[in-house]
Amino acid sequence: MKIFADSACDLPLDFFTDNEVELFPLSVLLDGKEYEDIVEINSKEVFDAIREGQQPKTSQASPDKMMTSWKDLAASGEDGMYIAFSSQLSGTYQTAVMTSDLVKGDNPSMNLAVIDTHCASLGYGLLVKEAVRLRDKGLGMQEIEQEIRTMAMHMEHLFTVEDLDYLAKGGRVSKASAFFGGLLNIKPLLHVEDGKLVPIEKHRGRKKVLRRMIEVMEERGSNLQQQTIAISHGDDLTTAKEFQEMIQEVIQPKAIEIHQIGSVIGSHAGPGTIALFFLNHTKNE
Image 1 (cartoon, helix red, strand yellow):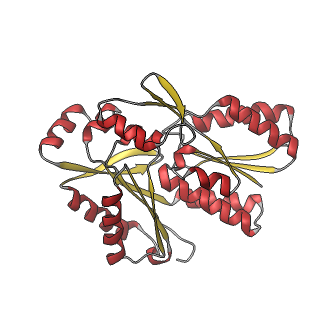
Image 2 (cartoon, one colour):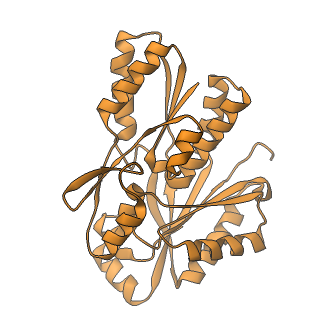
């Protein structure tokens, strides 16, 4: 089975090559030039540009690249599965459905599942990694699709940003909230609900909001000691590692993965973002 994923899963480029996953890069427009995420630009460059006052823009994955990939899949006769970035945060999923329908019109036997994960960053990345694991274990496409759809439904995203201005520029919070939040050192706690970013709480100070994220994980999580938990960060590995230690002390999960947030999501969340991903339901319950 051929697996496809896009760059909003925030997995490193070598993951795609090492695991035979085909990458659809989203695009970043910076300083008048368009770059393919992961392939032509890295998120450190994006975060540095934001710190210097630039506001990167992003766009969905290339429809032409998708069309080519679907035609190649149809010609190969292989099964295919595209695990996609949340349709509430990008038009990439809708483009995949539209282009695959066009190719399927000429190739009715093409077997491609396009999954709207309603997930982002490493919440999405954990799904891609699980699909690879199940494929390599020898499971069939239907079994893998069912597992990934179930896992996606139960993937929790908790995150906080260093500066509310970044979310204000993206229309996620009001400019007034961002201004007063900055004065008072207010840090928002947000989650993903039905694929959209939703603020749920505000806390004064970074340590308080990180401690609260762990509390919420304990409230919502299932069999956390048996899970691989993920942390993504906006060019702030020091805080991510401190957060990892805080989680380890309280929960002691099976594993904790840390990756830097990619260019596309980083363009909107900004430097200093810390995000946490875990499941609120597991098969071992």
